[in-house]
Length: 395
Image (tube, rainbow, N blue to C red; front, top):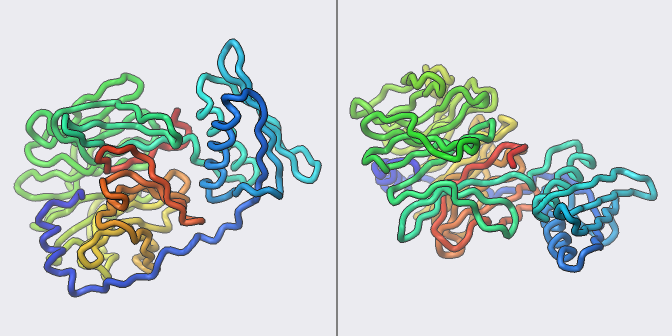
């Protein structure tokens, strides 16, 4: 978890004071549009295309596959000298809705592109099939920052280090991931650029430089610094490298997340003796406590529409993912399996949450779709955690 051990100890001592029973998360209530799917063409590609397209549609939270759909999607997939060609036509009651051609080297990328176009054309909302998720994987040889698509392709290892890598955060422009690395012997802030295919250290203040969170415009990063023997929230100007302190207390202040407007920040503080969530203006000032039902809260993440906050909370001796309205009301428990569910991050459309969990034994990264409440495992067999989601449009 992102909060230091001291906060966990506070949580264990306070946990018995709070409820162990919470209302389960309920489906968001969207009526999914039924789609029938048929795929023809190259024998080796038909099965891959059909299986992935069904997964993308059913996990969209907006469409669902059905033998008798409102619309019919007919897909033909073939090989050419230049790679793979995918032709898709969608009709409804004999009316032509869309026809698209896709070409490229990877069948999964083509299927994702069509699935997202299908979601957009039928609902007017963006799909997330083409988005990627980055996370940290720990192995006996060290730590890797990996990037994974939502299909059977192996994760891309963009950086490996023998020292600890933690708390990555994907930039709004899609080109950068900031994270904390201990490779220099200190918890410094690094930035990996996909354009340059390398990582550079961007902040090194003695102590913690951790838990970064981008503002919506990408010009500022909120992070935790432990300078002057105090653990507080600071703002980092990415262009100038200048930092501005937002909190100044003897307590631990960490795990910041910007509201979509950039005007507010939700964060974790143990100022009352155990970790709770607070909201303050992004320029600093008075913070308002928004959680009261748990003895331990951490890792808040503001939804893209600004209406909800996901976070980790302790229930008994276990840790689970919760979602509440941004004012602290309407608390819903999202996870019920496993004992360590943490680090929630919203998908860019607000219909999905990625998180790490040990629900299958070893810690891995999962995604939950909030309309059907379907959970999908994303990462492989290695110990994986701290997910961060790419923006729309990343390839």
